[in-house]
Length: 138
Length: 240
Image (cartoon, rainbow over all chains, first blue to last red; front, side, top):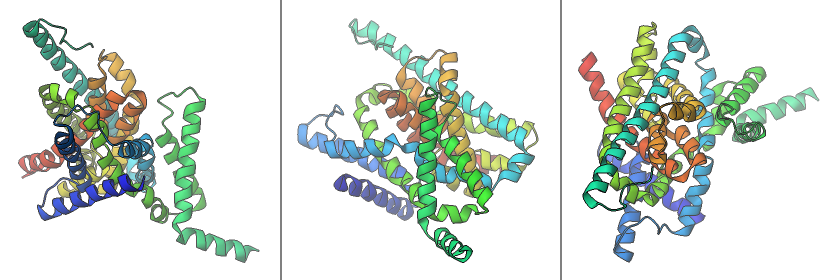
């Protein structure tokens, strides 16, 4: 618990430092995520000479799983900020509600639909070139 | 007696304890309602917790800043949690590599459509410029969205509210809309939730399926990067 938590904070700290030193517009935690990902890759390449994603150290996996299980809790404090903007939200209720509902549902649907269509296409070309069971089960 | 109560009140509003306890208690109340009534996505625990806390603070006459002084410890954990998304992502790495092209195309389209349609709809219905600029980055995780909002002249705290509302909408209605367009693949479903609705969409996807969760985390991270880089550029192109 303690080791993995330190590792997560360390990656975040390194990410913040990199973002500031290089003046990147990307927030530190996102760079930290890339660093941890790269670290896991390098580790498994060094230790086993291959990567199949099946070798995350157990303590890290448990800690990460524990935090992510309650990921949506972490958004509550910022969400309560709704009370500060209640007047603007009331005055522009229609455009804001329409924009949020419309764009969010469109975004979810379109992104998933495009990805699904493209994956199917490449899966079917794989299947015809390999003539094997390589096509993914959808 | 009332002097004692007053002293206790002063202590509580100065210490982070009350805000922190309130946040955890309200979220658990939200989870309880969600579980009790058949895990219906519309009964989103975040939504319930936010409404409970905002209601209580308003009744008690406590301002948001005082509450946030305590609740910021929960808020802070967003950082390590974002880093932790590397783990499910890594576990799905072989799948990610196989669908690289689909990921890139879906990401760029989804990112652009989410931002442009939000601004377009609000503009058509007569929203103010401040609101429009605060809406543009609403699909990405709050630390990124707030930074971008500030850069292009929106209100970061208003953007944070839009970000959370976006997440709640996707978590509540995402399953329905994904069934409507008949996408069954977990990777595509998760990726759509992550790109359009960041961490709350990811939390919902993780609840449903691990592969969907990993791809949602990927979509959230990638759209964070894409929006942080592209939106300021786009803004300068349009508004000079």
